[in-house]
Length: 355
Image (cartoon, rainbow, N blue to C red; front, side, top):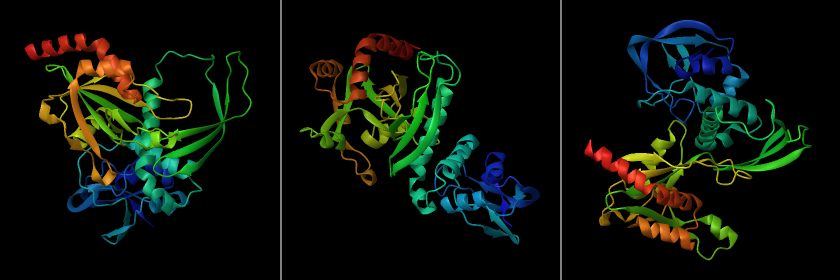
């Protein structure tokens, strides 16, 4: 029988995968890393024999445990004559998030129970990003004033399917909504494009009063028949599982433009197209130093990114917004928001510098 340690021994996963497991003698040694265990592929902790005691739980193989191990390519390793499950080669630092790991396991084993395990493994980063976005949505919106019809139960899900799944996916829902007059709707079939949350940051130099834009090729305008599929945009990217939107914004600044951002100012976070897309955008103004030589080329080759950055006066950005030259929604939103708030933000910046 396998012995579970690390993330698999934590109640969040153990009770999901092997509820009949019993406590076993600990292993002599310690675990290193594993902050992304069950969240990102190949990130279970390394085991170092020696001083220390690692809690262990013994269990027979369950169908859930076997499938989970197959999806995540987890194999037992022999330690002291015991077959141990939950060990990898990750030694990185960080704080493990059991709630996220358990929610990912639930999604893999329940919603995607009929999918072949080999087909799910390459999708794990995006599945994890999607589940993390669902947890953020629940945490960030529970306190908001309720609009729409009254009552605690307002949406019922009749069926769920995923007819398309690759890097992004499409979910097909049959829903019933409580209507404003109090009755329930008949079956409503709705398709939702699923891409996870994204972070958007417009770099602004308050001393020089200039901003940085990027331009890159986009397939969406090509599909629409647009003669100009290169758009002016902000720095932007997906929020990976295990990171915050702010961390993603800072990371993308380096990846897309080689730019260090000293401070993030939240803008108007929003759903860009909630009728068909589950994407939520976290919008920021990023305080940065933008001399002329900051502009250049960037992007990650492994993601086929071909990005050019431009540094322009903020007043030119406002003019471009008003004349229709900006056709990227998040950039347009931040351009107008910055125009309305730049005086206040500049005063706050000057006050910080004086302290």
